[in-house]
Image: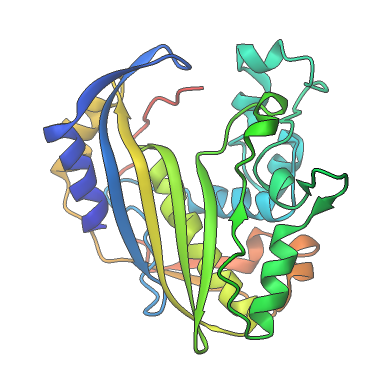
Length: 283
C-alpha cells in the first residue's frame, strides 16, 4: 500500500502534463514505476485508502484467461469493465471489424489464447506455459502476451498490461508483469490485484509455491479530472493493514478456471478501508 501511495505522490510532485489524444484530456505523467507484491507472505495489495472492488478485477482476469471478446461474457462473470470500451468508444463504434453490441474484438485473452501464426492457425500461449510449469520446466522463451500490433485495428482497446512472464526457481514461481500505460487512481487499483492474483492462481494450478510478483509500469499518469481527488483526499488518508486473499483450494487445473470457477471461489479477509472515492473514468 505504501508503494502505491508513494507513486501517487511522485506523480503529483514530479509529473509532467501530457495531452492524451484518445481521451481528449491532459494527464499528469511520470515514466517508469516498479512495484513488488509478496505473494509468498499473503499480503494482498488491495488499496485501503479508499474502498476497492476487488471482485471485478479478478473477474476481468478470469475473462482474459478464458479468452473472452465480448462485454456480455465479462458481465456474466462479474465485471462491467468492458462495457464502455465495447459500446461507447467512437472509433470502435465506427470500426468495420466490430460485430455489434458488446463486441470487444480481438483483445487481451482472445489474442493470447489464440495467438495467430503467420502460416495459419494459432498458438495457445497459456496452455503451453501451464503445461511446462506443471512439469517443472522453466522455459524463459515463453511469455503470456496480449500484445500483437498486427491486430490493433481489430479490437476496441490496445492492451495496457500486455505481458506476463513466469519464472521457476526450484519449486517457487515468480511473475514479471509489464504495463505500457496506467491510469493510477483507477486502473492501478485493479492491476495490482490482477498481478498478485495471477501469480497466486498459477502457482496453485501448477503445484508450485508462490514467490514475488514484479509489476513494471512504463507510463503512469493521473488524469486532470482526477488530480484534485487524489491530491486533496486520497493522499491525505493513512493506509490500513493489508488484507488476505483466500482462493478455493479445489481449483487445481487450467480447465477448472475455464469452466466452473466463479467469484464465489474467492474471498478477502480482514479488509479495512476508508470511504469510496468516485474517480472519473476516461474511455
